[in-house]
Amino acid sequence: MEEKLYDTVEAAVFLGLSRESVSRLVLVGKLPSQKFGRARLIREADLIDFKAIERKPGRPSKPKEEETAKSSKAAAKPKPRSKKGKA
Picture 1: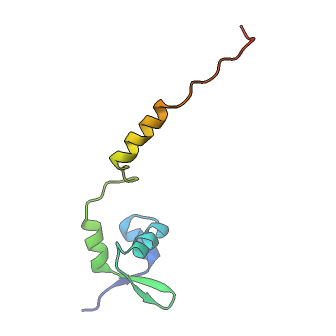
Picture 2 (picture 1 turned 90 degrees about the horizontal axis):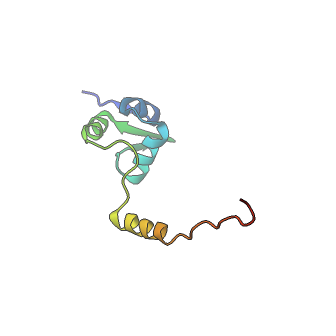
Picture 3 (picture 1 turned 60 degrees about the horizontal axis):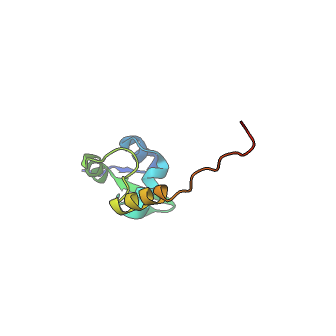
């Protein structure tokens, strides 16, 4: 049986992502691919495996350390100055 290969545009449609997102996943190694000339080809089995992984939509949450540092910066912010001469 012949294995089906998808380019990044077809893979994007299959996964419901943008082409840029698929290219980024390939570059960081989260989605295996084969280079054929200038094109990146992705096996259908790899797309099915990737789609089966449950992912949260949206931007990943920040680590707890950054959140606590950010809140301490907000507390250290100076208060806005009052405008003198206006009643």
